[in-house]
Image 1: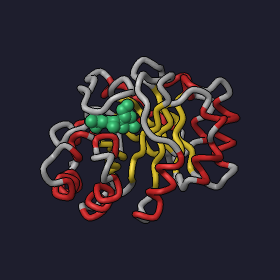
Image 2: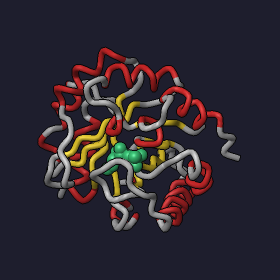
Image 3: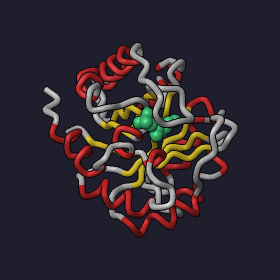
Length: 218
Ligand code: DX5
Ligand code: ZN
């Protein structure tokens, strides 16, 4: 089953609670929260206090995407703020295996994100340890960027690898996902779709999510 994870990066930051409720109404499966530190990526967004305040708004799992250097320094804060999945970037942490174990020690799910130029081989020896791989389909940092077409091949390769090893790992795609290209990424092997601007810049948030969910993905 394909899951939809609206990214609140493109929501109205003065009404995050309301926007999350709209997403929930439309049938969102997860809420994707983008944390940026102004170092790993050029942008700065939200941190644990905001996530903590949003926790009471919905029961949907919080999918926290950390675009921060040395994420290992903040795992506990994000767990305490209510994260259900924490995804760290392979490029941002030197001891990736240790960081994954650290996340899992709190009983939540661990994901690893790969920038567009980062090869799949960088996660070869830890793939058995994780619950999700986040394939960036844009360079992280901003909403509303254009999907990088070549990454379709990377998604396919990863799906083959996961199938070969008979693993139960989600493939999440993030960046430039629209109603028009959703079917294509699913065909490549993605099963969790992040959508920011496509959802929150649309005139009807709930209806747009419904449309994502109604696609046949055949
Ligand atoms: C970008 C973030 C994304 C962003 C996607 O670095 O990780 O989650 O919100 O936005 P869209 O869907 O507009 O490309
Ligand atoms: Zn994201």
